[in-house]
Length: 440
Image (cartoon, rainbow, N blue to C red; front, side, top):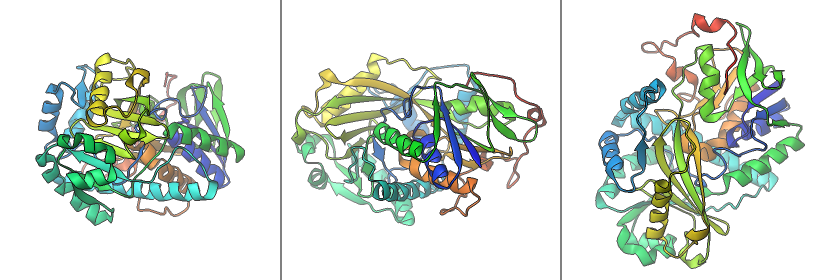
């Protein structure tokens, strides 16, 4: 059948590739001039199933207050009257319980581990290269309290069979020798040896080329306006170049998906959470990280990508703002300079931001919807790169009516469409007429 994919980030491109491999005719549209030019362009570079965890967890409300008051805090909120932002915050706070954290993390880890396996198979089958490294992630704890609190994560990791180890200072330095010069900055770490790193943009561009070789048509510079809905099923998309029709439409438009879905009655709490990154050339390889070091205090990841260091992180609730405040750059410079002084050249660093489409429970929304012909691959938050290959394979299998290779419980749209225990809502009657045109 003909599959239309909205979005050519790492998620949309992965869906297109796997759908084409299963024999579908695939068209991808994106308003950008090429693949991977928005949120996938300069993210932190982590492929981290072991670090897959919701931001909503026990103690987070109190932590958030502390983060907001820190000079280089990982969280910023710009007050707004936007009801979508406040709904998202309210639902996130409702997930800050020990039970919800364990449930949400187990769902995320399930998809993330599957995605890592799909990525490894893809790499073996195709030889795709993207400055990849398979040296794990070191989650660095600056305080004993952080180290002690890792116990909750350890229980879920143990249950999911995710390899992990707790390290003292010497153990950390054994895996990241450059940290010997700053050993007084931390007390220990959680190491996740199964994690990987790589350049998401390089991967997305290479995968798009392979998808095109399989017959996928990429139509760049085409803006989605509204889903083509006839009252029964989605038949494609209204664009600034006319209507494109397909048998199945997959929305992989990241933070911009909500504007497309709301006219159909699908009011999903996927909200843009802004993140920032610096990319700087390595000037002293011995003073740079070997893989990824995640600073737990500042929620900033420091990753080696070939001859570069990528420093990425922070969370800012600011709607769709794409400005680059100097203060955010200063935070990233502080973290990398504090842990790896002299490893990279900050004078020649590139500063970037992206909008990460996040759900309040951390788990993405993947699969079919109550609207015939409409499928979703959205809400991956900070883990789009980690979950991309698995999401692409899973969506392709569901489009082909194949049995999914993993349990899909909790990954679909139904968890946001419930009225009471076990009762999914129907699409509202207001959505049974074609939506008006709108900018996506």
